[in-house]
Image 1 (cartoon, rainbow, N blue to C red):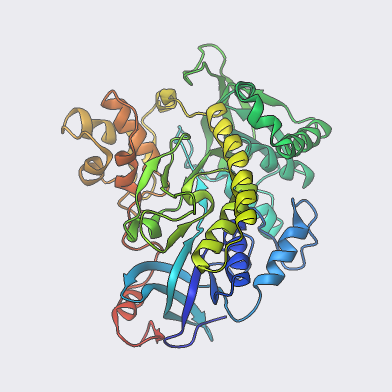
Image 2: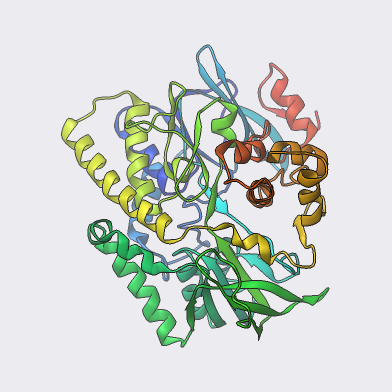
Length: 476
């Protein structure tokens, strides 16, 4: 699955999750020659992550994946192509990628007239004492190991954080034979009651949640709300226990409610951070979404602020697989510039509006208040790559006069390491804003989200990407 030198497409779709798959099928059905580009060899994204020979057991909407997978198969499915930079040209766009050919890493370009960005999101993390211990995973990481490799992260696991995603993670681990000590939801899902119309209009979401609840009940997994993991304990051999505590509505710890639970693994997630490197490289406008994430702005056609750049899925707002599929269809149809049936478009937009209403209710029910910063007792590390503690970030504000995350990054180095702020960016922005006595802004998050290189690459890849000759091996 690779391109030939100088090959061009009408449309290139970045990301083979639900949004990217739907966009590719819609674009091709409109007559556009469409490439589907993904760093992974298998399509499906995180939602449909699977192993070779997977029969769909434990997966939702597996028949739909099979249909989409069959529809996108062929030479224009470019798996194993990691896009590290995108640029606008006179004829459209050029994507700079790395891939492996005959055991060699090769730099390649993909050219297209229009671009659909459906790169998804990754776990948003909040630091706490002990979060860097071996055995402390992101919730998405725990699920990826289970779905992609059949590996449970531990024998006795604590699942914690906020949001509905905790439920499938815990249910999957329990069904795999893991003892799930408990699911500790920092928020209060009763907030959904403030949005009855959105909830009733998405009955399938209720049924899905009820299914997870039945699984947890069957395995006798406790589910506790307004409760969080505020510390992990262990050593070089891994985590041995966690401290959980009750929280108030602002996520401040209620004194005297702390208790220690033994475990050998923890899966923690506080929502998701959209992957915006490509939209930002192309100059697309962003905004702060209801869940506190920085997202790219899309219009009614799923087009970004830049012409011929279309957005689908989590990059323009975290809302789940069903919403991603609809947005993908709309983005693919408009990117292809083909015949657009008004009736089809109207139905898709109504479904999108209904699913977005549920997403808004979800974000309202699972906010991330600023009280988490008070969990950082004992001066834990915030930036793992550069080993920057919370005290250094606070000192950059109180002693050196920094007023936003970008300046703190330059002064104290959070976000300057290998992950380039993907893990610590949100937490750094939150700590800086709290020290400054204000809320987190879009500009705070933009300071840690913009990256000229979207994927880790070698200098050989960069040099090959700048060379006018296509398909140059890195060791040329």
